Image (cartoon, rainbow, N blue to C red; front, side, top):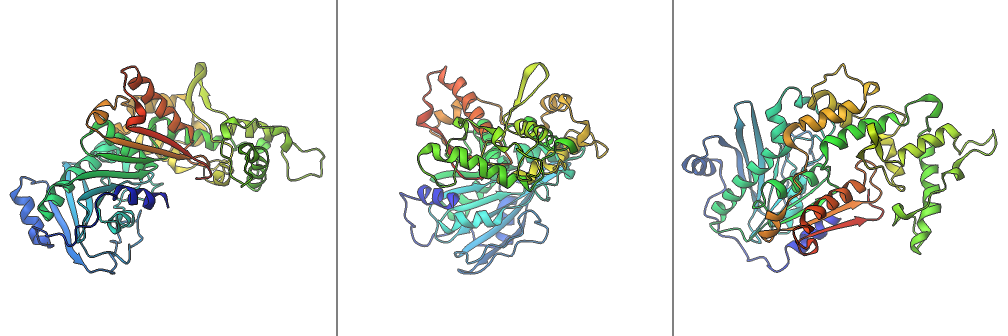
Amino acid sequence: MLFARYLSYLALGNSFPGLATSRLSCSKEVFSGYLSSSSHPNARVLQAYHIAEGDTFEVPASDIAYPQSPTNLPELCVVQINVSSNPESAFSFGIFLPVQWNDRFLAVGNGGFAGGINWVDMAVGTRYGFASMSTDTGHNSTSTDGSWAYYSPEKVTDWGYRAMHGSVVLAKELIEAFYGQKLKYNYYSGCSTGGRQGLRSVELYPDDFDGVIAGSPAWWTSHLQPWTVKAGTYNALPLSQIPESMFTVIGDEIIKQCDPQDGLVDRIVSAPQQCALNLEALLCRKESQTDCLSPQQLNTLRRIYSDYVDVNQTFVFPHLLPGSESQWDVLINNGTANPLGTHYVEYFLGLGKQWTQEQFDYSIVQLADQLDPGNATAKDFDISPFQKKGGKLLMYHGMSDGLIPTDSSLYYYNQITNVLMSRGIDLDGFYRFFYVPGMQ
């Protein structure tokens, strides 16, 4: 598990100092008293109590995005805080405060449109000694439900960036008050939307974290979500529709053509961008053949493997890489609309439930660029303040990702490169990007 491996490295250099001496006792009354005496009138304590070593934290039933209860926990204090960010919105966050603390803070991210505290990922960090935190981003929903955003701009702003920053600032203050000492290092780890949250923190609030791990970041919200709708149209026409049963056949052919080029036949495509695809190998040679494609279906396949380019040859978004076929049932499928795209148009852009995937055109991309709901897109490419304060950014993306095209991360990296290298800033000293072959 990459997440756990990264945490083991982050925890190096500081063995557990034994039992931490807390300055605040683990109770709702004590934390409430601290908040009332420290100028936080908009914050209130929802729960605070002790968990014994080996016990389970029971996730509240309202947390529908992350219902799994973390088990076999180290001895810790669990705290949950609610903060009014605006008269029309509020967010909550949870903290795990381990008795055996490594003097470090770890925030973890969310996924999709999900609102909810990610307690189970918090627990991973806490087992390595981190005081860990997760925010609900201001609402409760599953990762594919964006209906909460409809005509709720303040909630969308919380989801976009505000809830994460507000949670981090107050969580760090409470951690230092609880242990009675300053944090040594502050870290962040998240994937997908969580990756976007990490990049947005680097851009907007460079002092929030010393180190950020951003996995498969869904950073270009205003283009990724419209592309998701567009991808759903590729396989929607009956005469050119590729049956979902053929996705495995296509994937096997891609592995046959592209796997050996790295010198190791292991059913992992390590350099899909360099593979010279011969898609005609999938064409039907006789009428009785079934595990093959018609010329019309082959054109559909070419569209899937092509960048989304629209009016006046405007580049909108990169394509899915060869090797991603095992996840095509999610977005490509049989042309059925995926809410990760349509809910963004309906509820974030405000076009309502009457809007359908069949109405999609380039005007949706233009509207998304104009509105960028919640200021969510991580498009502030001058991250030199983060570099100057000594921050470190590690970004990775799976090469078999069938939800967020892998090269969208390369596009982000290149934008940062263009801005910072012109100023003589060496990226390798603080920002590294890695492809991960075979990872979805």
